Image (cartoon, rainbow, N blue to C red; front, side):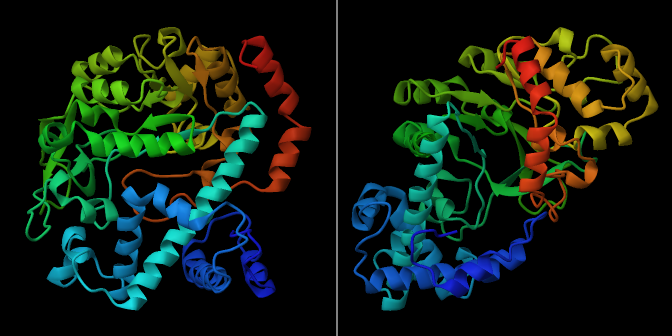
Length: 426
């Protein structure tokens, strides 16, 4: 995990006990922090000399615009027993006031430790990215549109969010109305952006800085919930479901024009899924961004469905399913007979190898990029599903094993290469 010669043998033994088939976040939470803090203490005792990723002080200076606030936020959160920032004493409740306080030495030490953990991560990730580049692999990152209320982002710049600027209470929260995934909609609860402040105060500088940081880590960035840049669902802060809300206007084309001016070489993907207004598609096309198409959404209706392969467009990314969908095997098992019959007749298959049927269909589509979940490459059922939207627990735990990857290499890899060559995706 740390991988820089700062861990003792028992630390490494603990890390090797990680579950192999699932990520156990509870176990990780209680295990990793003591290990990391010991690594920081040892590095500090050595004067931060001989570190593997360059000079720690230089890293802190380079990333000071966000790292100082981030480290102080987590240090104060530790200091206040893990409470949310709006429950802290008034002098610590926002970054601007906290920076004026005489902070205990323990808080300053903790802030330095959290900055050190970021130094380790950035150093390790730089090696991962360099290794990918030497193999001709580009990395796609993700920029979730919203941030958590209890985050360094909101605590540092409350003026950029729809909050009571004295108490920090949200005026409205984010989510989506009832849809394919949930009859009650999805009540995410994130604070909404004060878009006029973003636009008028600094020309979307906060977002541009955020995207620039994304591109320091990845080659391509997927903009999550793209539709909210056109119109977003505003839910009363005290609501218990997402049913009762209002569509409100997002920043629109002006936002992407500002991004283009600041980051002219940015490669972006628009996550344009869900129940979309025509104005959302018009904004996507005006920006020239590729959207997303999901084959699992294509079947059970008629030939006008936009996700059917014959209706796809070149400027798009086609997926059998995404992290928010079931695996293709799991989806097919749970689908209605009408949907399964449509799949079999449309693809001219018997459905016994449905994951590979969808992979072949994605590869053969006109869309310029095809992305296939690892679970489908491995032919796994719904037990390997990544995420269920609207369900708070039990997500993002699945992971593949070395044995599964070795089996894929020795079994289906040749067929995957054949598909790449056949459809000019190799």
